[in-house]
Image 1 (tube, rainbow, N blue to C red):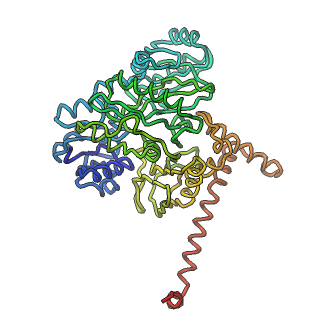
Image 2 (image 1 turned 30 degrees about the vertical axis):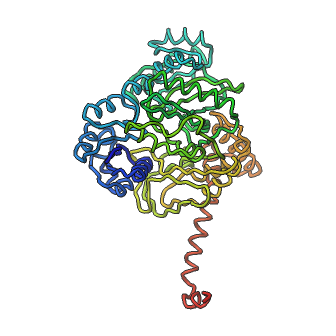
Image 3 (image 1 turned 120 degrees about the horizontal axis):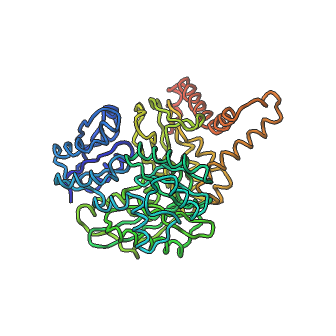
Length: 510
């Protein structure tokens, strides 16, 4: 087992990894940029090394600086977390060449599955169903039109080298495809350094379901069931669940078996995720593989009882999986909300600034993976997620109820957050019935807008409101409860200051 591990990341995932190291008796080493000098992960680590200025391109994305910090600290392993360098084949290779273990899959597996067209080829070899489309990048408009005609509109253009919604375009006709190829290619080049895009048939109203897998270096591969990741904003997940509300043991077994075979085809070891689209008829299609730990891994941990980070570190250290497939059980239900420092009233723009007050939820079935503290200045240079709030319940309804309670207890002062948005979603009947797909948030916001317009129709002076004003009114209404609660807390505090401490002491029972 490792004595020291350098954590090549920041924020809540760095804190999560530090805690896993502590559990295993490993000394955690942090790196930090100028903006993160006072960050929580720096405070919790045993050692911390400065790696550059605030922009990630000058710090967290500079592999040479991170490997140099690992050498100086004497770390035997580097854990990349997710994002940044976690899926960069060259970084995993460079770490190995420096004599440091990359805590993740092999460079070859990252390269194979990180390229979406190569991943589709691997899935076909594994016998997994794929969405109709290309297994090679499209090079020009004429080829794109030919393939789209064969597949049938609508189609989706996707960046071959990455995900996260970058380089994606929906195309519904020949007239749109030329400009879409150019724009998707330019966006892919800017995000991933590779303009290659490929074409898939667009599955209307699909569910986005992913299967968690774990594999060791001895050929043992298991799956840990599915996560429902359909609730997305701009192709980024914001609410995740385990298990999926529509799933059953038979479908889970078939999807799990397909995921295991894809991992085998890639000669994969470490933890990873195979993502599928599921249509209205419960047919599933391979989408892509994420060769790293996922943001939403806590919901799987809460339902299965398996510590995925611990397993990932053990696998990297050359140990066998702690579990066999028959050992995995799914108990209860878990939901995760990604709490972002974003302003819902302004189309979810980042809301950096100082956290002037922080009250986090707790109690039965509540887990809050956070990387911030009261007084911390949320920087504008990185992803604005400040916390992953997850709840567990014996049933989905119980998990939802606990999430509602937890969101009600959560207060972040000084910045705007997505908490009011989540509170509104959890009250929505479509969500509560589990009738969700990747278009859910669009429909939800349209329903909220329609309700707001109906309420305003009786007020003549409100008829000239534009769409942005209506949307702001909707989200302002979502946040009313949170603001009222904060005001009530403030009032209670000021009133309690007037109460005689002599009187209160006299009331204490002896």
